[in-house]
Image 1 (spheres, one colour):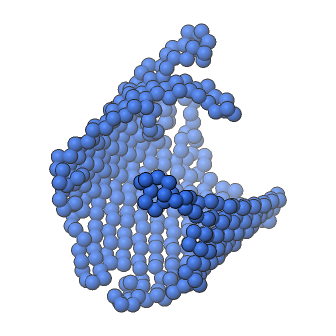
Image 2 (tube, rainbow, N blue to C red):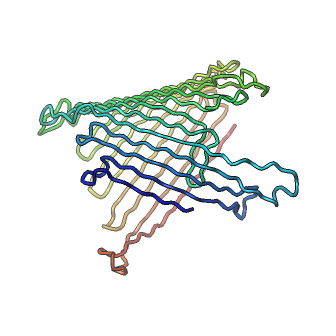
Length: 394
């Protein structure tokens, strides 16, 4: 692959204030499969160019990053693969791709008090990749249009984020290809109660830090493909909802945590409306650092999954622990162990597993072997052990 990039700064005294980059590519991929891989692969070649623009004002209230790429993809002939048959060659394809991210900060960070600051920003995102767009230099999902909106704000110990995404495929509206649309909305709220009810000199350590999050994704087929013998029962229509809460306490050398998770998969496609799944998770963790070089952590998690279509309920219990020890400056030891027990509510199936992993690492220095190595070359050696045992009964 051969690439070249030319960057132009309109304001050299303020790098990134207005920068334009122009790039070119010429590359090819030789069809060589692995020794144990049986595959038929055709050579690929592409040429293309791209432009990228960066802009920001002096106060950083408005920031823009955008790009445009045009790629010409070629699938080379393969006489060995064609075996003399009258094979019609794949025509060359020239396709485009573009993206743009715009960040707007209406006002700079505002200092309300000695311990409270306020900030707010909005991010607009756009991306389109044409159908059949390909390049040998990078992977990109072709035939996709995506638009997004992100909102971020903070007010002292309060933080709020929200994001929205709309995407679709089959941009050429080919009647025989399923067109899928995805709508996603997500948000999170964080409250640091120790800072909220504490003072600048001392925080209320007995109060937790609370984090709430929620997300909903709706993915559905916009139409039934024609001439494809596709039934409406195969057209996806599903809504996934996820919500959770986390509480964390920090009191000296002791850390406590609790998390709760809930998810629901709502199938709405014809003939599968009852195939819904619900999942709930509880987790409790305790961590302690009696010394600056030693850390201990224990976690207990309980999970319950319900299949509303079959009436089956599965339960999973997991107990895990970890130890980290900085023995010396360049020597560290870590050990992780866990045991998991799963079974259904009717007690017709059961599975259990046990895992143990340990790692000892030692750093070393090789001295100043190279002139540009001021501190000498460094390295690290690892000694690892792991074991896993599992069994299941039905």
